[in-house]
Length: 296
Image 1 (cartoon, rainbow, N blue to C red):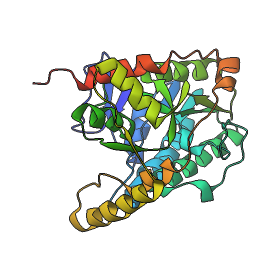
Image 2 (cartoon, rainbow, N blue to C red):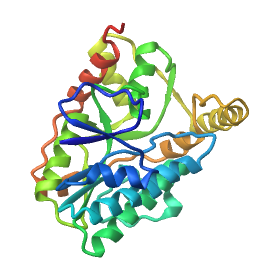
Image 3 (tube, rainbow, N blue to C red):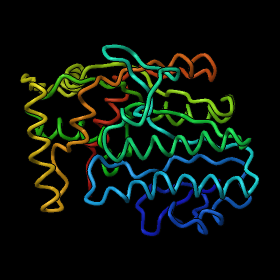
Image 4 (cartoon, rainbow, N blue to C red):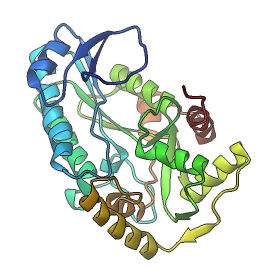
C-alpha cells in the first residue's frame, strides 16, 4: 500500500509506503502510481475561502486530471474518485440523490465549482473506458481532523463557546470511518461511471448543536439568526479577509451554501454497495473526543 504525501505534510504514522508528490506535479503522480492496481483519489484543496481561488482549481481540477492520466497510463484497473455532496442536486425543501439534475450555476464558490468540474473530468474518463467510480461524501465527522476541515470547525467552535448563534441550515452527518468503508465498497462493488452518496443522517444545524450539547453537557446556542444577518456578516468578514489575508470567520461561500439544507439519501449506496452507516451521534462523539484530546 502506498500513500501520496506532500513534502512536510503532517500525517499519522501509518504502515504504508510514502510517495512524496503534489497533484500539480504530473511527474510525481506518475512515480506514485507506478505498479499500483487501484487508486483512491481522496485529496483536494478543501477551503471555503482563499485569497487566490485559482489555487483550488489547480489542485482540484487540474490535479484530478493529472492523477487520472497517470493512473490510466499506469494501467490501474480501478479508480475511486472522491467528489462531494456539494455536487449533488438538492430540490428546494427536499432530499437529493444521484439522479437529481444539477448545473454549474448551482455551485456556490470556488470550492464547489472546482469539485463540480473535477467530477466532470472523472466521469469523462469513465465514458472513455477507464474504470472510474465516484463517491460523494456528505459532512464527515470524526477523529484525526487535524486542520480542522470546515465540518470539523463546527465541532471545534461549539467546544470553544465560539458559536453564540446559528442559522437555519441542514447537513447530512456521517462518520468519517463509514466514509472510508464506503470507498472500499465502491471499489469492490461500484459500477463504472456511477456516483454514490456516502451519507447517513439528515439534521438541521440546530439538531447537531443540540446533540453535541447532550454529549458534552454544555449549553447549545439558543439564538437563531435570520439569513440576512449571516449574509451581512459574510460580506463584512470576507471583505476584511481580502484586505488582511486572514481567513474570515464567516466565509461568504459558506453563507451561500448554508442557504439550502444539503439533505440527501444514501439509498443507492445501500442498495448497490451494501453501505450501512452508523448513527450521526457516534460520529459526533468521536469528533468531540478528538478535539478534546490532550495536546502536547
